[in-house]
Image (cartoon, rainbow over all chains, first blue to last red; front, side, top):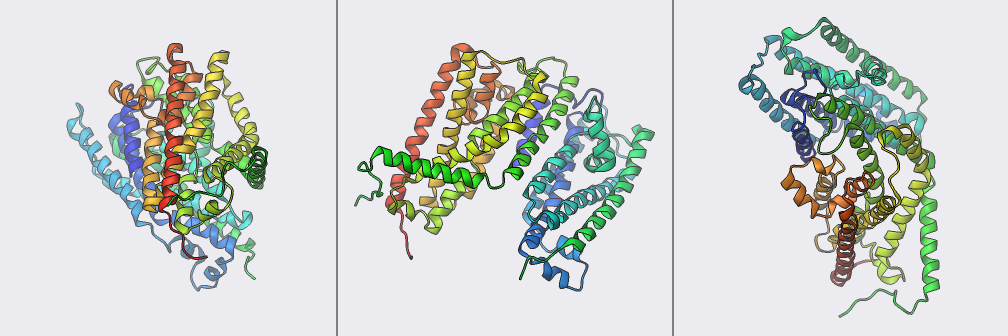
Length: 248
Length: 283
């Protein structure tokens, strides 16, 4: 939670020197705070429900205790993904909701040109939050599954943090020069850029200002989240077939 | 009653050097075991720099000014790269918690019966860790700095380079003795994880790791300038980028040396006082 406060402090300082993150991108101070709040909400859900289990999975593989999960008459991916919950991480989610409310108040009441939220947004925002969580979960479980081949994969967990670091900024900042390669890779192949950008865009900007490209990207995000779950399931199953117990 | 460790002045200096060398060599060999993973991990630590490049490019694109607090877009990115070097020197992962754990589980009593000074032993371990780190990390560091060479205005002159190296060296020692002092609080409180969390939080924000400290409002910058945190990340980078006026360069280093002395003495006093109140039970 304190890290989150520091993050806000950093961007408050940044917005003393600029009005937007990227020229003509539409990510002004409070629009960006909506983006930041969405990042916190999604990350806290991941850290509460999935992160402790993914970390445990790697340890189960290393010690051979994964055998016990395999023996149980229940889907292995399910039992690996959900047994532990770290409730303390939900505090960041509460912070996110607080920042989101404050930013929306600024955009809808205080701003010179108040933002009007269309009713479909109330459905689209939570829907794309779920899609974002699904994509992040897929990336995490895929990386965790590689523990089967690597034995111990601390570097890969670090890699998860560095990879998801790309999702913490508006995708427009990558659409320049060699950043286009990153934008394509992290939108269409490992779609982490869709995780926060799509829901935050629905909430922070008027719906009637959405271009056809925006709608296409939103439609693609739906397909990408289902596709990510499918691919991660395949990776997990493939990893299970390669599993060799470490116990005696 | 005065409690002293076995180590005292009767041990010849040559024997002490031999001990230190053995400790250093063992620690080095330990750290070279997973060198492939280590090099890959180092290379990946530069990934956030990529996002910083795009973030700051976007900020400068939208900003009406070409300079922000005296920094151009290139200088800010160069600053972030240099802080990676300074943090690689000054960060001491696990030191504080390690000391606290040794106090808690009684492992620390080995230093009371062996002719080895605990702080010296740990310092040598860290020197070995950093030496091993840089031996392996020099390749990914050189690779990334070569790729990003255009963000720099060239090499600074010799005086600045000497000051930069000195600030890195003192940053390493300062980082060690600050964290050691925090870890030694465990003699009184046993559990110091909350203290470490607060320290990490303050250090990340106030050391300049998150952003150049010049971006802070004037009053906040004046406060931060008198704290020791800035020497852990900001100062070496600012020296290299010539952000410290020449007239203040050596004064700043002298201030850093004073802070270093404060924490060396503090750690020593805390250790001496700590072992006087320490009680070890069991085998």
